[in-house]
Amino acid sequence: MANYCYNSLNILDADRTSINFITSWLDRYEEFNTMKEWYDELLSVQNKIDEPCTRWFEFEYSIDVNSDNSQELYISGDTAWAPTEKLALAISKEFNCCVNLVYEESGNDIGGDIIYENGEIRPLYQGTYHGYRLWDEGVDYLYREIDNYFDDGSEPTEAVEFLEDIVSRGGVKVSDTDLVKIFTHIKDKIDENNKK
Image (tube, rainbow, N blue to C red; front, side, top):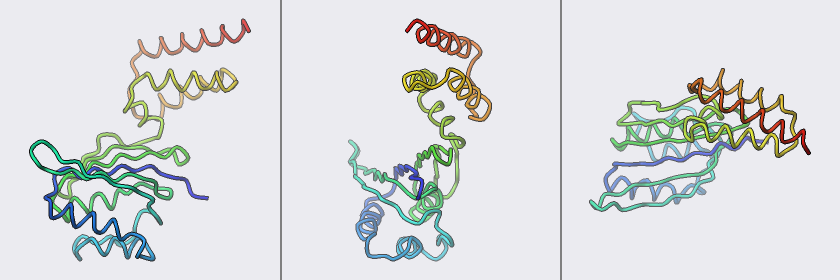
């Protein structure tokens, strides 16, 4: 069974002709047998993707019109196992535009927020799933996840291991002050549970 990887591709500065071409291509997804065939329909020879990063893409899209009459195309949905990094890069090259890709998949422990601009890659965050959630939401994410461990009846050691794992592998710095507050929160939760 596939792990569903959530993707959000925001095409920020393509011209109207490009947006119309891309949406027409999106509307025809079901006509193709493979992701490669579908990608090939969108991309010129110099931007072809040899091997797509996923086997399918269940998506929806919307277009926003800004006050300056420019358009932004938002594509979001699930792929199998991996994010649509190759597609985001190829679109940015093909249409000479900026694409912001945000993805997360807890089973494979990946998450990221990457800007692709005219074929250039600028990762804002690329790493673990929980590291991405922490980077995106701040320390409130840690409190919420720790509370979930206690609400689910997990052992307190699991909450501590979760916190240690994020701090060691997540790639996001948590201040010593915040760590002390979070460990105090865990201690308070343990004390609450012991009173029950």
